[in-house]
Length: 491
Image 1: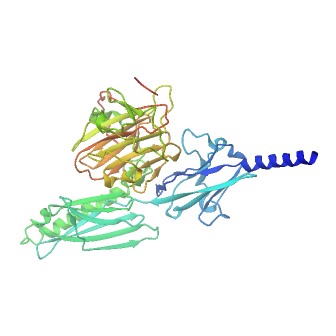
Image 2: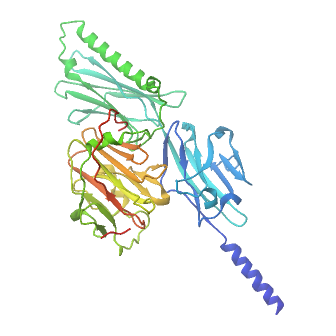
Image 3: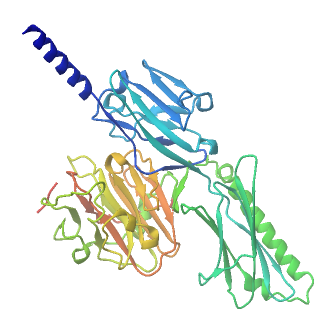
């Protein structure tokens, strides 16, 4: 009888040991950050447990024995190249840190050489697991400088130069009608800092266009664009031998001045250059903003019930929306199909609205999607359809998966603290959609694009939150001399 009891005890002990395990969780999407900025690579263990007693090893691809950061026995060891630039951090303002299983990595003063796949490896006495986070480092170059040169056949050869890019940008030429112009050629070079410089040129005639644009962009959508009026050059009197060289000289001087002002803008303004991150046309600035100035463009927004998903509960005034109590989300990930569209549409001008994400006595919403959508693109079934090319521009909060944009592939953002009230500014004419943390009075990010046709506000309340998503009526703006910086249930 005694041997049987011993065997049962051993089996029970073995069962307990084998079930004492955890899983390392990381975001599905790659993380994109700009050179010189600070970024968080999220990583946590599930189910949550105290990670202070575990070993945490962050290492780059195939460099397990040379970790970026090693946490062991309460001490941190950093790789020499990451010394004073790496640390363990919180993946969100709601995180409980190490004691709650949050083992996220913070990297500061990013370099191009930091771009890599980072492995988050966590091990204990009886369990271990790892996850991989892909970090893409980018650099948005200077605004293109245009140099016109009249040709003997009456056309104008336009040269376009820009520097400070990473990775290598694409070049496109367009007319004022947004007709694509064929470039005469493109040359690229790479400096010792691993940044790319690009030179392109094209020849245009009087019949081609009045304004010609040269734009440079990364594959994820970051964009710089400059324009020139070629008619002023073509109309120059060729009988005057000094007129054409004078125009060329003026354009060159203005371009050079613009390049110098861009390069040293933080010194000229007396402010340090703020951390920026660009993804799919999104420029994260993080600067202070005058909310009263924004509210001068406030418009009343209500939800169009006929264009909203049937599993959404919309208030009678069209201002509040949440998932219906009987909605059963059976799919994986964010419920992209639960979209509601604003009844108002826009084809020009600047328009601003605010969305409350944290009602009184309830925590801030973890799940939401807010932006604009092109008229007619209202019905979606999955994430693959929600891209700028299909008429969707938005910022999404996906709970523990963090924040990401509508780029393809999606790009993750690190936003702390979590927005409790989000401001949205649509500048149709300039092709910009900007988001603001109203409570913190901070500019979150701006999307640069080209709108065509009418667009409408887009809302998705997600599922599982106690708080509802509520569109606010903005208070009357207070006159200010400041300038605008940066572009539960209910009845």
